[in-house]
Image 1 (cartoon, rainbow, N blue to C red):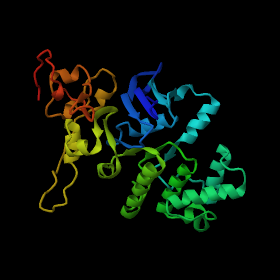
Image 2 (tube, one colour; image 1 turned 30 degrees about the horizontal axis):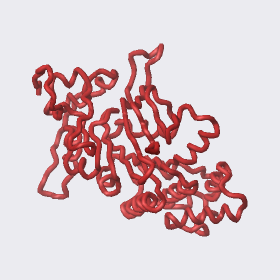
Image 3 (tube, helix red, strand yellow; image 1 turned 45 degrees about the vertical axis):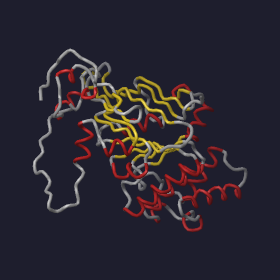
Amino acid sequence: MSEPLLDISHATKIYGGGFFHSSHQVIALQDFNLTIPEKPAKVTTIAGESGSGKTTLANAVLGFVRLTSGQIRFRGHDISQLNRQQALEYRRQVQAIFQDPYAVYNPFYRVKHIFDLVIRNFKLAENKREAREMIEDALQVVGMRGGEILEKYPHQLSGGQRQRMMVARAYLVKPSLIVADEPVSMVDASLRAMILDIMLRLRDEHNISFLYITHDLSTAYQVCDQIVLLYQGIVAEKGDTVKVIENPKHPYVQALIDSIPVPDPTQKWSEDIVLPDEEELRIRIDSGCRFYPRCPYRMDRCLVKQPPLYHIDGVAHQAACYLYDDKPHDGSSSSA
């Protein structure tokens, strides 16, 4: 059996602490596990509200931050132990598409500089002609032409053009995995559909997998094969995207999906929502389930230990909730 493309094992990232700030820790990500196979390529969604740990995970996969504990292995190699040549190859194989198309380009350089820089750093072409052909090929994948944009400056392009150009730059090096951090949150609906369609074509025609970071469950439902929903750094639920969204099991995920507005003017939203302080449960690894203050099914045992992921229907659907623990326990009662 071949090694998986990406294997994340017990990944934990804690910010703060240390000698001077021992009591001010925030657990951004806790005991996260995920496997992305080499083939077939998949689009894997990491979803959750702001502050859930999505971007921390993306930054760890891209090598921007080091984990406090755990491992990220790419084709069997721990990315924190790569030598210089291996690290360069990893950066070629794992590319990124960022959220803000307005902030990632240097306004002093023409668009062609972005592509020339990638080709030069990774030594992708032997001459200018070959380089230009590679650039044109990458631009055609996203529905653009070099003659229209390469001599322009970034501010002369629309937000949608810049975002598609970012996809073309990532595709240029023929990666195996693209980490897409909220890639469609700042474009309009028509361009959103176009970029999502490009992602699917790259998956199906070029065997490029995606780690799709988003808070938008509707786009996840449209394009993703599997989904992981985070809540305050922990995995609440994971599995096949359609199964999870259509039949959520974790109380947080149920509340998240129920909160999506229904396009019916006769159904009014609730007016005032008062939420308890939950951050106090995020400063210790052993603080139990962090959804406890808001959970309608909370039990005493939920504060003792974070629930593990229980299988709902085989391996395709898992939820971290004691409601699905079919084994006898110590008899702790509900406190809801």
